[in-house]
Each structure stands twice: as structure tokens, then as C-alpha cells.
Image (cartoon, rainbow, N blue to C red; front, side, top):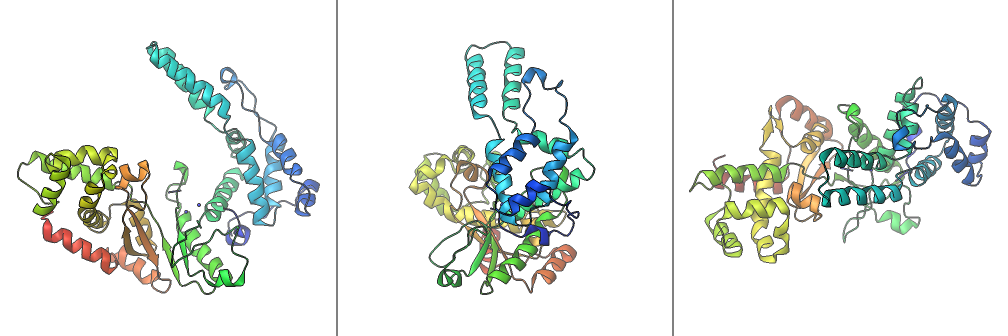
Length: 402
């Protein structure tokens, strides 16, 4: 959890993990509270240096023992906070060489300004791509070749996903938690009423189709209920990838069919055109593609109503083989969640504006209902949705023949 801090007791939660090899002396000393220098020493030995660009294909692989030491050491750490510390030091001390990235980026820009030949520019870009690869990738690459290495990496990644499942979300009525640093005061803990799952993502194509997300949601909920029995609401705060692209496609089609308008009411067209000075379909294509529309308060206000109902239809009404077209919606609905609430301007970043017009959506998990909801969706393709979603969908249907 598009996009998940350490602290969950992942060993108990991940039954697929192979029994760990007994930790060596360094692992035992660390578990006893040895200074973090022990971790740094392990990482310096285990993480191979990044070879020079010219030698990248000729550098021999490190000894298997170095990689196996990391696997054994990690498996011997009983506490999630210790594993988090190790991985944090790995990421911070053995990641991307930012100096190299800056140097290579400057070189690419200089070559582009000089309009150098394509072959020279392509090689410079390849050097930049090479510089962007974190050093620890070499460790993981070599671990994958060990017996049981791929299994270890999948479980390690599941640890990270699970640890990142909870983000700090604060508001006047709801407070989320960061699992690794929960409130310590009893009064503060008792005020926590909702858990918000911010992001779940698969960053490796090889793990597509592995339902780690479903597993993580259920396990994290159980862990939270043990620690915070007063929690009563479990919900995601999810992105809506593809919404802007879908909407631009509709604008393009209707723009070619002059006089046809099934997306906006007459009053909305007048209000939007008054701000942009151009016909709705043509002006909005440019504004929505760039995200520039949020710079105009009047245009933002004019678009709130239509974008909310169009997004509701995109999530609820647009289908692929009878299931939700949007992949994030399909994931949560398969898990038995309720399509709960669309949130206006929840992600005002450039990515959020250009991919989903700044909108995000909550999928709420009613624990007693997830099973029946999932069966209904998978078997009969029925989407369970809140009154807000259904009301926006009805508004769209009243205004459109799509």
C-alpha cells in the first residue's frame, strides 16, 4: 500500500517464509543491541560495488557467500524494527550515486543543446540510465540466483509492502497511524478511529498476478485490531489511474461530432466557455492534459460538478468483460470493498492532475461484508457502492446516453 514504514511483525504474518538459518555471531550480537556499525559492516561486504560503465559486462559476480550472509542475517532478525533498520541503511547508503546522476544529466543536456548525432546522444542517455540504477540492485540480482533466492526476495518485498501499508492521515475527525511510530499516550491511542490504506503497488512485472495486496490488507487489519481494538473503519485512499485519459478520449470523440454533448449540461458549457473563451470540448482537452486548469479558481469551481459525476461513471459504469475497467477499482472490489467516496482535489500534484484530474477515491472495508461482496462481484459482477457514488452515477445517466 500506488505506492507502503516498517514495524509489522512480518515473520508471523508471512507463513510462506522459509525457516531462517540460525544467525551468525554478528546477527546475535545485533539482536542484542550492538551499534548499527555491525549492519554497515555487513552491507559493505554483501553489496557489490557498481562497476564502471565500460566494465559493466565484464565484472565478475561476487562470491555467493557474501549474498548468503545477507540472507542469513536478515532471516535471523526477529524484530521488524531491526529489519527496517537494515533495509533503511541499505537504501540510504547503497542506493543511487546522485553525483553521478547529476554529472550524466548535465552531459545529456549539453549534447542535446549541441545537437550532436543520435549515436552519441543515445550512448550518453544509456550512461545516465546506468547511473540511475541503485547499487543495492546488484545484491538482489545475485541473491535471485541463490537456491531459494527468488522466494526470499518476494518475501522481503512483502515485508516492505506490509510495512508501508499505513500512512499518517490526520483530519478533524479521523486519525490514521504510522505503524512503526504509534502514539504512546493512552488518550491519543484511544482517539484513533480509522485506518487508511494509502497505496498498494507491484513494482516488478514478474509479480503481476500475485495477490500480495489482498493478503496484506487482511493481515494488517488483524494486526491493527489486536493493537487498537477501538478501530471501527478501514478504508483505502486510492488513485484513479486512467480517468483523465478516458475523459480526453470522450472529449475527442464528441468534439468531432459537432453539436453532440453528453458530458456537460448547457449551463455548465456556458460557465466553462465564459472562463476559457472557447468551446468546451476544444478548450478542456488542452487544460486537462496539462493540469493547467487548477490555476483558475473559476474554472476549477465550474469543473467540480461535471468531473465528479464523470469520474463516478468511469469507476462504476465503465467495464471490461463485465468488471470495473479501472484496475485499482477492480482490485478493491474483488476484495469485497465498497466503492465509498470520491474526493475532490485529493491529489493536486502534477501526476494526480494529469492522470485523474486530482481526484482520489475511498474503498471502504466492512469486515463482515467483504466475503459476500466479493462473491457478488466476482460471480454476478455487482458493484457495491455508497449513496454518494450512486447519486453521481444517476446524474451522469440523466445527462448522457452513453
